Image (cartoon, rainbow, N blue to C red; front, side, top):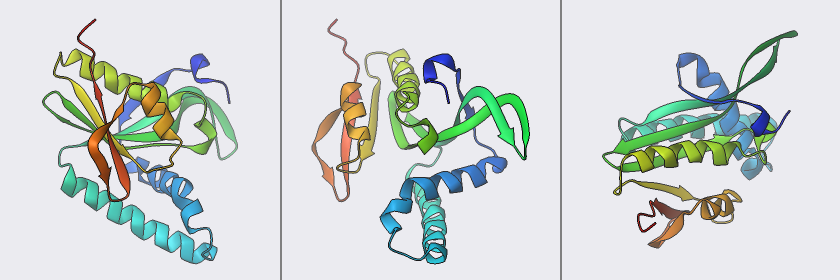
Length: 178
């Protein structure tokens, strides 16, 4: 698969037809945590957790927008090759005034390490910049997640007292001193 620079990034609102992709992405991202379970049991646990996560997001961030992260390119499905958009991730974004909360971001293994996550977050940071000097972006990350280095590189810092339970709260603030 080519690098991101050679492809066009697209964020589109998720529809009912994207649910299977989101479920498969969830399984892909979380499977290692349950590797000790037999495959059937692992699939059942991941399915249940996927459902619980979705309900929790709806309760905690009502009004959040679920987006499919795609890049243009060649798509192969059922042996048919055509130009199209391949879904490679998801972004759940909640906005309240100038505050943008990245509720969830996940990138498929085939797209990791190619700048897709940075490009998606770059779009979110652009939205916050457009919101003016009060624009901020908040997110949380599990300790030890390699994405934490990306977030720091993009200018996110840990919130004071930012470790709550199993995640670290991080914030990006627009630099208005320049």
